[in-house]
Length: 141
Image 1 (cartoon, rainbow, N blue to C red):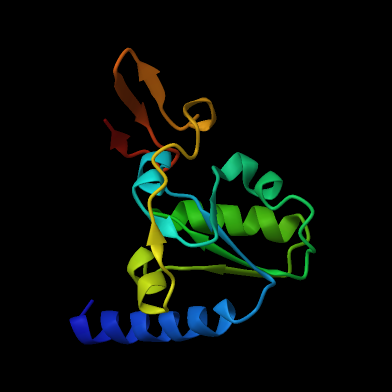
Image 2: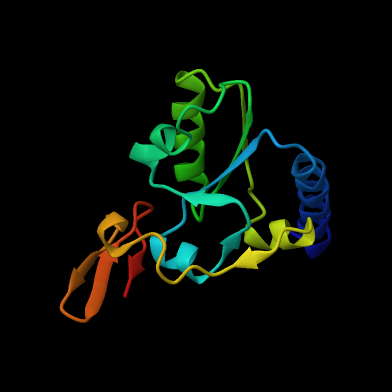
């Protein structure tokens, strides 16, 4: 993809996120690895894995907007389908990545202890070394 096309897509995505940020009925779900989430995620985002994405939204009204952030477009598409099957009517995928959130004015914050080690089921702790395979199939160490 040409840089011009990439940045144009990023600009459009950032504009859309900027408009959504002004509402209180948007839910950001970060489907990246727990390690990536701990390192940095958009303000207000909640970490989840695909099998728990509906649970992550709790009792959110099904008409509220949901924006998914994932490293894998395939994973995001499957999670979006799960949400639509569960009755969520407004699901979007942030295809341009986490930088788009920054461009839209979201602060990116680290949370070194969240999710807790017991919640981080996308990898396992072996002594002092955390190894595993994320839901999207990439290796993490």
